[in-house]
Image 1: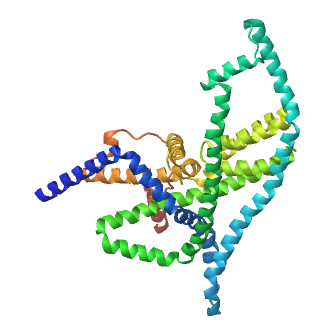
Image 2 (image 1 turned 60 degrees about the horizontal axis):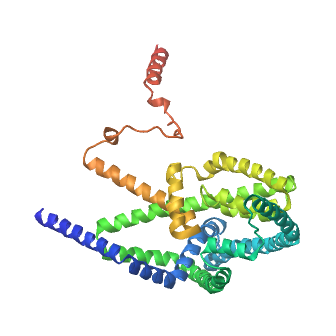
Length: 423
């Protein structure tokens, strides 16, 4: 017992030392983590692609080609490569189809925007003339004089006009070059990631077996069991949530396309794809997706943009209250506050992928913490209701079905009926 206490104290001291070291050298630690992420980026991309494509792969392998090779053994060898090939063909075929369809519509919308630029310029000029005339009348300043304009630029930027233009070339041009370089690096990572995902999916059973053997061999029983439990919870939460969200977003995108086509809105396919893609992001996704699409319609016709806002509100109400709960069910298992919290934190840390994966990851952590708390309370022989009364759920759980055979009234009635029969 004494040795155990000393061991726990030493662990606490070690953890505290590492924590202090982390905060003192946080910038260096973040640089190291950023470098590691850049090196491992293709592998991480490959893991993500393989994880997502594992679902259509299993659909083909376990269902479509389930009986393949039962009569002819040589066909069994084609089961895995055929399932793998069809999974990649279907998913990337859909992506290529959407991109090839969207580019002409996007090009058409840009052309419309460019054609309407003279009209927008005239509207801006009329508005600026009115503002300049009002300021000139009330204050005596003429905004169209270069000196006044230069003073306004200096007030906003802290520099004169020449310095302002110089800063644009010195700051924004290198930033644009870095952006282009980043796009090239990202494209390279995704291409290598796709190749890695093929190897991962093809040999996933062997890799999982090797990982489990190494984990059990080198870790204590308590740790590896806990590790497997954590892996199961994360896989269950993330997998079901992502698949459910993909199905939900596909249906919403399809309904959006049908609705926009019926009401004869401009660019129904382009807008529907944008709405469907951003619908993958919980809570804020519909709002983010509606902003550029509303602006696109606003360029063409303000009334059409207003009608689209009404349509998208109705569609998202249907998704949030009817379709989403039917498809996702109790997959998330956390309140609306924690969903918003996880989306904000995940988006702040990792951008759009963090907004998408923040909810299932937080839900998995929430489940593990909840189960751990229940276990600890059970060891202390304390009930959760003794600490705080149970809060009624926002959405009541379905009532448990009662077996009438276990009902005492039913048993008493059966006895009376049997006595009557015997007489």
